[in-house]
Every structure is written in C-alpha cells, then in structure tokens.
Image 1 (spheres, rainbow, N blue to C red):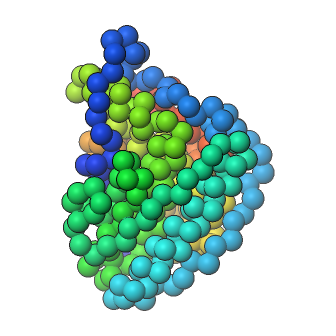
Image 2: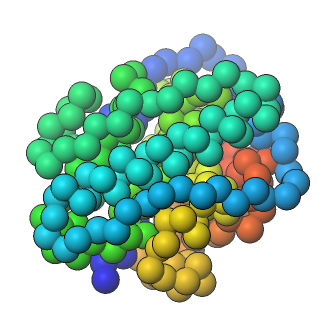
Length: 252
C-alpha cells in the first residue's frame, strides 16, 4: 500500500506582480471567499456516488474510477456553491497515461490543476495499475478539485498576486497555505462522500499515514497537512478551511 502526498504542481499558479502596499505576503486572507467560507456548521448530508471497483493491472478500470470520482466531486461542490449563492463552473478533467497535459508536463505523482484552462489532470501511472490503493487515487481528484474551488472563489489569483514580489520564505508560506486549504477542502468533500469512495482504510488509519508521509517543501509538514484535511472532514464545512489567517505553527 503506497501512501503519498501530492507532489509540487508546476502549473498551479501563474505568478504575477502586485502593486506596492498590497499587504503581508505570508498571511493575507484572499478576497472573494466570504460566500463560501462563512459557513461553519450545519448537518453533513451524505452523498451517494457510484465509485466502481478497480481491477489490478486495468487502466480502463482506473479511468472509470477517476471519471466517477470527478462526477462525485463535481456534484458535491456544485451543491455547496449553490447553497452559498455562488456561481459554479465545472472544471474539465483530463485523464492520461502520458506525461503531457493541456498545461505542460505532468509532474510528481501524477495529478495537477491547470488554472488558466480550468482543467484537472490525472495521470495514470504503472504503479497505480500495479497497486491501485483507492484512497491515494481518490485523493488525487479531491485535492485538485480543492484547487479548482480556490480558483473559482478568487484564492488562486490573490495568492498569485502576493507570490510575485514576496521573499523566498514568504513564498514558502504562501504555498503551504494554498496546499493546506486544498487539503481541507478535500476533507470537507470526504465528510459527505467517504463512504461512497470506499477507501479501503479507516479515517484514523489514513490520517496516520498522511502524518507519516515524506515532507514536501511546497506543501509543508505532513502533520499539518493531516491537521487541515482532518479539520475539513470533522467540521464538514468550508468555513473551517481558512488557512490564510492560521498561525505559522499550523502552516510550516
């Protein structure tokens, strides 16, 4: 059973400059998210999705799994946006077995979000076919959908504006805040849909595995990634996912 954290995503954010006085680059809350981020409670409504079994060695069954996961995530977030009174646009989803995508080479473990194209790219690897651990594969979709949500509510553009003129240390914290919020959004999705995912591991077991994963300079410490994913899962609402004003101890 392979446990991984998503690798750095080269084409996640297009860097840009920002006017002087735009605010602190390490902890400035992005605009445009109040309609979605103000919700801190409410009953979690389970979402039933038909997520098929994966046959070891079958690329076709992996494609079917990812398509079903995409449909499940899309339906979940469309409902959340509607409840918040916000417009929602579905991303395109590209499932490939090559290193190429609409925004360049697929890096790392094989999933990335292309913001300009609003496309989630999932690459099926030989390791996926040999060892198709469902929760790893599900998380590829859930995490990248979190980035799509960030794009729709203005977080990606705000982070990009702050990133350009920032120091190396501030850039590192900005990357961590972005990735940990995507982890938290994935947790919110799991709060409603985990049973349908049928992950093959208990939630506590998954959290332990995430905490023990290799550290990524882009994403931050695994224990903090686990903290935010679990916060979204236990809270069941996007209001629990404001990583932008969280203390550095929960971000580094």
